[in-house]
Length: 212
Image (cartoon, rainbow, N blue to C red):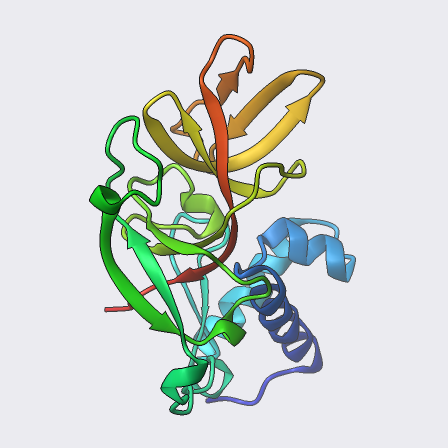
């Protein structure tokens, strides 16, 4: 890999910190804001340079589609004693009206290192669809979820509306709750807590992906 400039090292460290702290890479706008660039285009130019030097891989058409490569990638996890591993149930397609952790929704279980996550998750949810594409959450990803019954604006949550379970960014204004997609092809879901059967099923605390 080619030698990086001081600015490129700075951006690379910013990407690493974001992934470590939130489970997701930063957007171009977040990089620009953090480093004082005038526009997201300046961040994009540095990202393209990092990609050409083999430090990262960029997924086209997504604002958070950044993956660390080579020596900058997450180090191979040393073998962890089984006693220290955590077993997480994997939730597949949720049966209408059933609790999310009901037996009929469980597809498998994974033994994972709890140190992978900032907060201890309670289960993994298989993501379906592209509504959170620009947050770097793709169809088929395994989202690590911590069970909660409240959330802050801007957090990515798993929510139930009637018989549907969805992953969206949470925003509450007064008594109105909005579930925001991270893909312009999808519409905002507006929830009326008094009229709609609504529940928060959990908070996203990390992401697991099998790269092909």
